[in-house]
Amino acid sequence: MQNTFQLILQGTFETLEMTLISTVLAYLFGLPYGILLKVTGKGEILENKVVHGILATIANIVRPIPFMILLVFLIPFTRLIVGTSLGTEASIVPLTVGSIPMVARMVEQSLNEIPEGIVEAAKSMGASPWEIIVHFLIPEALPSLVSGSLINMITILGYSAMAGYIGGGGLGAIALNYGYYRYKSNILLITIVVLIVIVQIFQESGTKLSKKIKHS
Image 1 (tube, rainbow, N blue to C red):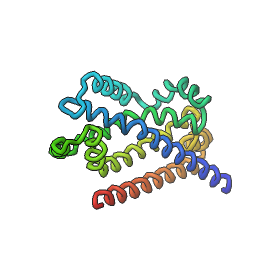
Image 2 (tube, helix red, strand yellow):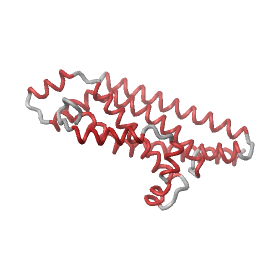
Image 3 (cartoon, one colour):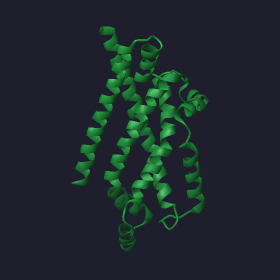
Image 4 (cartoon, rainbow, N blue to C red):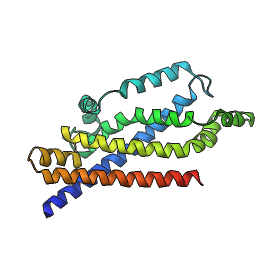
């Protein structure tokens, strides 16, 4: 029983590590990506058909790829970055790469929800494109961005479980190696319950933070 507890505890920490680090990295790249998608679009403050077309095409190519296929496809790149394609650190690479276009599109959607009048008012006050982005677009979209980050985090959590199929760590690897291959249904059930609990914690925390931002 103690060994099972330690196994699940280690898997939980590994899953949280993969999910949180991948989410942060995905937003580090995906947030500016999404902003560029928005501001370079037709009629926007930095309209650029070529740049917008390239960014949109990349996002549209990567997003529909099933995550399991992306995991395998990125093995050489993962080895180049972290020196191995196995384990928790290796799983962070495809989790991040696969999530960046998803984050970018969600950021773009959040910014599209902002009334055009806010941007027009900023322009009339002489605000530069950078000032419009920093002082108007992002603050106005912040509640939506927080809600979107919650959805992305839960999606990444689900992806992290899949990483166990190609040697990634976490609860997915435990469910596969012990629950499936060794027919230990109790471990499989525990991993499912732990994943559900983690999702609920993310959901409640994100909802409360989003509501707090809306009322601040």
